[in-house]
Picture 1: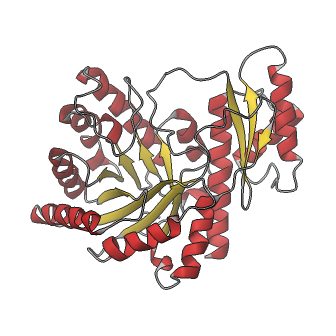
Picture 2 (picture 1 turned 90 degrees about the vertical axis):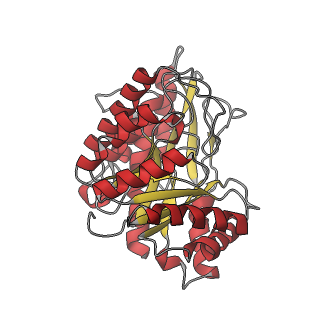
Length: 365
């Protein structure tokens, strides 16, 4: 994979659940995947991708640098010698913590920094400098939450010109559609329009189209119940194949794994609700089962929900992935890890999802 293009790019938060899910993938799956890791904030308010604060949220630069370095090292351990992108948007309020915590590590790894048109000039210039020094290339993440216009093209053209002025570097275009959770979405049109405007500005090494369809909030669902949202992110690929078959083979599929698009926005160690979701990916939907994380009868409730998932016709069996194996062991009470908690549920969901999507893409081309 180091010498070829990825088949699949999951955008994952650099948290222990997603890192463990990736590290435990079977070798053939890892060989097809190049994740886009996003480092979460250390403290402060929730951060939204693409929205720069007017003042730094985290003023403890030494603690922030240590946080960034720790996440970077964890990504490097999970990736081993395989390439991936690392986006530090949520911790880029000031230069020193990200330079000392992330960029100083990259030349000794296959990791690629990420920048974007909405980022500070110093960030764009420094990310390009690191990409040139490492030889790994640079990812440019462009948010496409609506139909893009010529202004988006002009901004990207200007940034490419500035990067070129400093020397050549391989560039990857990461088109991020964000949340696509509505059946009336026009995200396939947005992506094709973005390709028309931006795809021809440069000879990109890789062009990725990312979207996420796991809902950010399902608060109205009762604990012990299950919901089945549609995989609109997967539909986008098929819509684009139908609308622009000559273009789509040049575009790499990406999603947000089995988690919603805001998985990296919250500070580490923040408050979480007394419930979470067991999750499973089917051909066209996500199965989300709402489970309590505390209280009497919690373990029995989690096992009951796991049984509902493994008894569906879509369940692929314990041998398919580590995530599938954990769900079956949880359902039958045969595993040594018990019923887990929110982190384990996300980990199992990501692992099974990435395995399944890699299989879908390698089977269908």
